[in-house]
Image 1 (tube, helix red, strand yellow):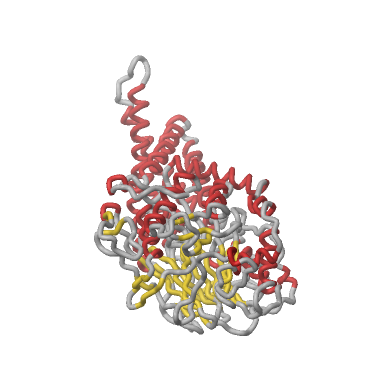
Image 2 (cartoon, rainbow, N blue to C red):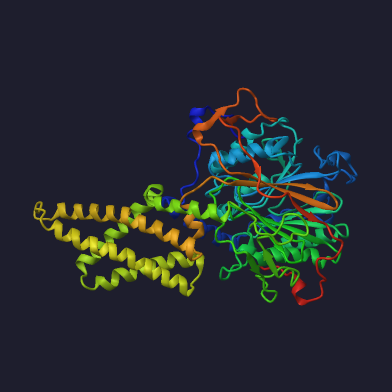
Length: 615
């Protein structure tokens, strides 16, 4: 898709802002899309369809994966891509990783502008642009549709990296895996953009080359990157499992893998029934079972919109979350200092007993010894401070608050007409409603039940007292044509207003308290504020002996009114727009140094190493 030419500053004001996740119509639309996509995902999994339409040999899989390495030989030189993974003067290859990107224009375009620069100055470091751009999931928000792809992804990236070779294949490749938001249309548009064979997607100066929603790409002689697709159901289809099994068998012995998953399962081990770590582990076993001494020292993911790094107690493996490409900020104050894995639980373990504990407070340099600083961005203190924005929940989410007001009106009618039974009925309905809402994300623990009951008690108390007061006061209003129409209208307005203001404020307090003190509702507490600060992506320098990971942060994103047309053509390449004050990228930590070791990841001898498909 070619996208649109840059628009005027006036027209730019109409481009999408951060998604308002609590808007009632959006909540209804997303619920419908989740139900439909989940249904079709079970009975018409497009991963299986694409695999059936791509019946190639394992050798062809390997050829595609190795095509960008300069040392790869071709029977026909015309098959060689025009852009290769050329290494710098120090024999290092640079690649980029970004995830959770296509949301509000300002944050997405700001990160795209940093990614596109041939040389990016970060503090005292000069970091060259990656020869490969990997997108780690959720390329568009709030759901996949053509307008969202064009305005939230295609155009921002086109304008940040004006295509220097229009109509040609020359340009750094871009590979992507889908996240849950990409699956909300059954993966139709993701496949249409990223896996089409002719013409290749031109995303600004980047070019798409992949054929499926998962991929393996050889980077150097002994470094590879694998990226998987877990669909909406946290599962691995059999063709995908077979694909990685075959790739592993064709890799050089002692090779190293950067493994990308759609979710940071190591952060979700406390969530009841969550399988996201298990599906990444499933693909990791493909490397182990090849029995070629393959290693997986780096595991990457987006999905959670912050930066954090956990070090495995093997002294090598780094589990890094970097979901700061453009979507609303997620908190970090809830992160545990240690995450204990359970080798007996396939959904909460890593390669059997290879890693049994993860630590947040370790030095970025190998061998990643303990330290006092938590490897997260924003800091925990900043995260808690930002959480206070929920005190303004009413002004941030007026549509949801008026919906809550309508519920208060119904509760008021029940109070007046079903008295005194309403003293039991109204608190029960409020409590059940909040219980159903909270357990959707947090599970059905005793804490969830108690907090839901307390929340229901607060809202029902406000609703009942307001209803009794207004019913008494409205009795003084005169009838209208034999009906108490003025009283009915006034009662509706009164209860709706109280519900919107008092109920909305109570809901904001509920999000603040449960996130700050009870480790619940972190997603909703921050999606309600839709913050676009603390953006991040990873730039990696790869040699045969080590990888240096530069986590690049951008604390402040320019406001829409601060963008100007780049008439002076600043930058190389020159983006279509520049902010009044230059962007201020900085290193979040490090760089992180991951050393390559010759010892095997694990010996595949136990039953746990079967690595079977989970679908």
